[in-house]
Length: 316
Image (cartoon, rainbow, N blue to C red; front, side, top):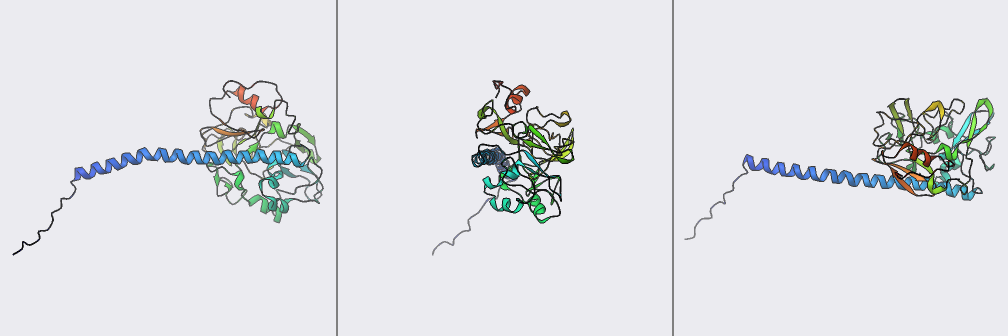
């Protein structure tokens, strides 16, 4: 007669064993989380660097199309219906970052003004018109850094459902230091150089840098970086225009970039600002560099000034 099968006895985890398992899992998560965050930051930084490179390449392609001329930082158009209509550099390079359709909508050949090529004009920034609203609300992926905490679904975080933001800005000293007069006390901001005659050389001159889409809580109040933003040329207002190293009001135009920035705290809109540990900048030759907080003011100033004749410091 066969023996009946006995039920297999199972011992449950003791409380101490369960706590040990939980502690081991917590340690593993604690070890893995920084690695995951580093991978994410590296991917976001790589995307940011690629965006900056595309902006510099678009500038070079613009120059190739228009007799080596650089795009204007800002152009004032004298239009009867809107005498202060302006267009900035990020608008001008739309056709060179695969945004021909948007450019075709906001370009206005009958606007009465032209850029330095004399071939077309732009009618932008007029809220309430179909073209103005389209360009104002349209987010442009190459203008957006994945790590920009001042950006929310394509908008500047302090302009939700308002104006679309940008995470990058051109250097005023390269693209806009040649000012010309206009109606109503306004001026246009034109480059003093072509792509081939930047005095200090394209590899020694910063063309673009990160500038977060929203800026608030710093010493100069609220501002931001809007890709269709316009500069009040008469008063030198750069709170919302995509530009850095402009010099109104004696702001901190020549101070090094702020890094590791949270947009709601201590953000200076007159300087490049970055959420990364190092601010990404695009040199005029197309190379990309990360500028840390250790760079000196003298070195940074030499890098953003295209014609000072100074050698970049050893901390560059």
